[in-house]
Amino acid sequence: MTSKPLLQALLGLISDLSLALPESERYRRLLNAMRRLLPCDAAALLRLDGEWLIPVAVDGLSEDTLGRRFRISEHPRFQALLSRTSPTRFPADSPLPDPYDGLISGRHDHLEVHDCLGCPLLINQQPWGLLTLDALDPARFDPIEPGTLEAFASLAAAIVTVEQHIARLADTVQLERERADGLLQASAPNQELIGRSPSMLALLDQVKLVGPSELTVLITGETGVGKELVAQALHKASSRAKKAMISLNCAALPDALVESELFGHVKGAFTGAVTDRRGKFELADGGTLFLDEVGELPLSVQAKLLRVLQTGQLQRLGSDREHRVNVRLIAATNRDLAAEVTAGRCRADFYHRLSVYPLRVPALRERNKDVLLLAGYFLEQNRSRLGVGGIRLDTDAQAALLAYAWPGNVRELEHLIGRSALTALGRLSSRPRILTLTRADLGLEPGLQQAAVMRLDAVTTERAETERTEVPAGDLRQAVDSLQRRMIEDCLRRHDNHWTAAARELGLDRANLSRLARRLGLR
Image (spheres, rainbow, N blue to C red):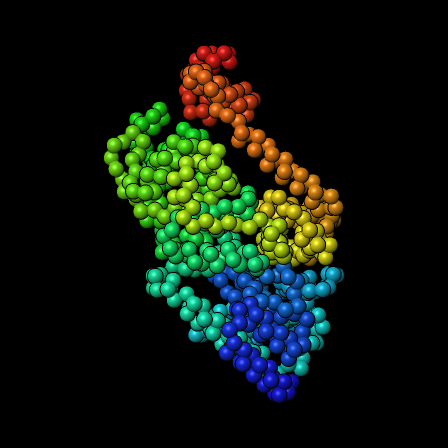
């Protein structure tokens, strides 16, 4: 390797340092220059995050690699690279599995990497991540001089340092408000918002903007898009990140229990209240309260919740004592709350108090190729669970993922990948080193997209019909009896007419349930 090509490559990258480039473009240029100088089939830059390595740029690897998160303890080659300060080249016959096997871009067969070279990136003498080069030819890296990759690693560390300084300057106001030990930390891989589509980048920018503030945030979006992940990101970006984020799914509780869950109760407040109990607001004092499916709250609870949000004071059920709390509220819903206000199912003042800063999470079908990044993330999770060397998608499978409508959004994709990987492994007589998922394994055959859309429309229509059901008019006692009768019948049906189990779920004594059932004509 002559010094002139190396010098030209380095000068070009040094010149880029003076340009205002996005982080991803700066790293892409680094890998592109390295591949021109050091011929290889693939190169990658990975950031160290605790026990994980997270790809921040790849060149020559499949696009879903950017969505993968590599647990270091499960990849001995990465362990070996991080244990040394100088470049490491693995023999072609090394028994250590290569994490990139089967991920070379544009190749559809089960190709294994045969020449692997890499070195750690050190910033202030601390490991920041890795630079890796891979080739299918076992002798590809023979001509490389020992100092060439080290020179690139030094430059890469300088580029990373520049990017970090740029980020700090851009976030000066935010960083000045955070504690010295750093309240904003990178999300753990299993809590990460993954995506590079314009809609997701816009959402991440908004999270970055509003996260450090104290504003109430209303997160909207379809079921399964990841609203809770957005709430977690907002909490971690706030000055309350060291405190707890308490979550409550408002749709999972009977109306009679919502008030107690939110505000707590004192002993004797109602049947079954045998001790004092703090509610979610008190548990979240000093931190964040996340109310999921907030559109399901009854009007009576909305009024009491509004008072707490406005004054910071609450009373436990059965108590006249005031408790003051300091809570930041983040709410989420898949309903159109403005329409709910018009329909009379949501208070206008409650809606406006919640939507101080509205955030909409885009549906997966609006996120273009993010589906492949997310698929890579879930594939790596399932690779670890199933104990195989690698899981990849063939070209048709990738096309099927991109073409599908995803009525269940990211949650549906996660379940599909897990189910498909297990199915594909089960149909093989022996455990492969690299498991390839096909369109057939995914079950996304032509016609299923239309069927999925039809299912989504059917669910939406059914829900709309349910929501149009009016409250019964007439005698209040008759309406209460009718509701109790339906609840008991539904509970008995779930428990195969087992009265003791039904009484336990309804929170009643077995004898009291029998007496109530007789009065209602159920026995």
